[in-house]
Length: 220
Image (tube, rainbow, N blue to C red; front, side, top):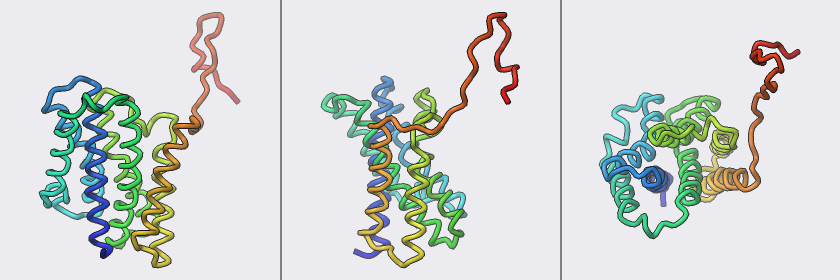
């Protein structure tokens, strides 16, 4: 299997798992058939569209190649019909989301590198490609986006993107090393969920006895 074929397979697999993630979230919110398909489409292709626009590839693959839209639509409709068999939807959404995050991190970073984007920019594009779909899914289902919470999400994608850049620099762009990079993102995301790892958040001072807003007080 050539690198381009492996990249296409990984890209379409990422589309499918993110579409399933978006559709599962929409089912949990009790949206109708069109709503489920639309959320699945945005979750699957939002990050890729953002990636292609940033690297000036127009029209984006989501619109230029029918296989992307078809994969997203078919997967979302499959989730609609099979959701009674998908128990514990929240766990399903989280696992599928982690898989999509991993695959889109790898493909997004590689595509940026192939477009001759410098290493730092390629890392950022890979991260944005990975989190874009999940961001759109959460906004459409009225959830605080995962990327803005304490959970390790964007950081996992950034770590994977950095590994892809390092592998690319040493000529290691075959299926095995790229799979290892995807496994890193997937594993890091699931371990962070399991162990409740989180990024630090600002601590608000407790309310004052005189009723004044504690946020007006300075902390040195």
